[in-house]
Length: 335
Picture: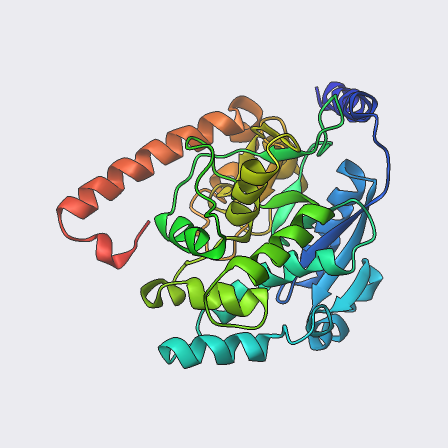
């Protein structure tokens, strides 16, 4: 059975590449600052297997690059040298001046880094990739006709669009209501991202000299210490609004909550089991590994599909949340 599955994976690998007809090397940028060395090694291994045209470039603090010997696994760029005046201390300063605290500065800073890559990127496209996201199957970011692909999802967070509306004139609004562009991996057209940054600098009336300052000042004070901006939601809606014929949208089989199912450090068997149903998984550090020991059991992974286990677990979890909420216990954040 395992041998048959490996042959299917090899055939799938070549099918993806032959259909796309695009075997050009592409830079894959991974912002990273706290992963363990074995996690970095695993991530690069799976990217090399399932996206071999990707040239891995890490964006990281110089202290972290030295600490984990990051340059063993890919090219490294000191994140503070990427874009003039864009560094974690400046982002903290601007946010703190507005609301007196800077707890989410690192989260916003990573988003600004992903956007600013376009300033020096020489290729037509680049890929940005979350450090906790692993490709389990061969992937292509172009369709059969050569169009780049947005990974379409179903998600909606109103503060993202409140900020988006303030960044451009004429305003960019949510272009496709049933689709969210938030994902763990995205292919960026370099010229469009450059134009997006120029548009913010020229069109946004919020205070600030550069795009990241204007974005911070466009986020409401109530959301600045929460989740008030999404680089992917902004790029996706800007692109589909002003460049409607540049991308296609496709739904990939992704599992953001994989750590709940297999834990943060899954075995090879667990990853093979997940790969039969999912193309990408994310191993978020904040997730609770509810089913980690259950899914290490050979009886479970040999007799149950990963997608079936995930769906059953989600139904149980959602029902339990409703019960806890009715009893006023949801504040304890058990789930």
